[in-house]
Length: 195
Image (cartoon, rainbow, N blue to C red; front, side):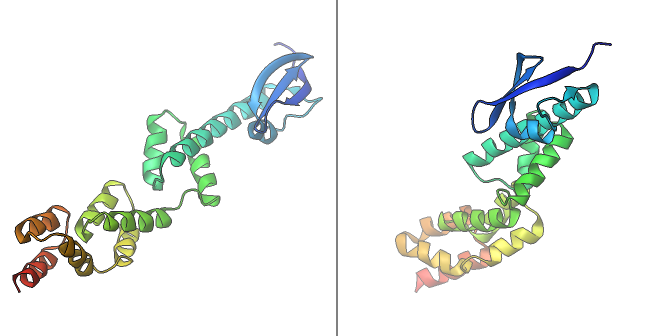
């Protein structure tokens, strides 16, 4: 069994990284958060348990970095983020810790996501059925889907707005149907366009 090495230096090399020296020799660059959470301090002798804890903290830091990178591209609901992290090979414990940290910091919020996504889809001309379907595909929970759809301007009013821009009745009705407007809404617009 080899003797434990002593931490002889911790040098900050960026705002998020630290260089660890063992027995006076540079050893490894680590995320500052992982080093702090693993309890690395100058004078500490690294035992096997310390290295296990450090490995765990490194996996958590990597999971958090990957999750943050994904959310920087575009907002995601929790279930989709978890799926993507899992496909990247993130360990379950690290994945769970990263997702919970992001939720605590409000970087990940399914309610905010559902409301914003529904509004965006409605503004792009989608009906309630399409909004529901897209949110279901994105694995948003049913209660939040219904809350998001209920928060939208009434579907008939949105359809009337689209009708103002389209003079061809047949093309308008086909567009409304393709964009997931309810049958009753399409029928109501068809009646109004006849008049």
